[in-house]
Image (cartoon, rainbow, N blue to C red; front, top):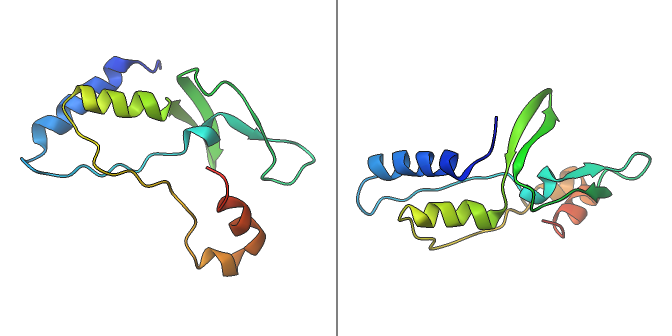
Length: 115
């Protein structure tokens, strides 16, 4: 499977075709920085080594099973949507929810400071 601009444009055309006038498209996308990083063996789980963020391709991650993850930069992702006629009115980085502080204070502290 290859990541190409065409894959995204094709999806963009379909969304644009079925979205009603003045409709809203809400996207929840994984963090591309995490897609290009791996935990460092023997270090705390939040220590990571990074590969090439700008190389857009398929990566594999394990979430209970090994799964392909399509990696593109946020720049590419948003440019393709805008090429299809979408406008970006708001962008919100994800953050851990406040109640997570009680569940795992150390993880919450770290996740609150990294992308």
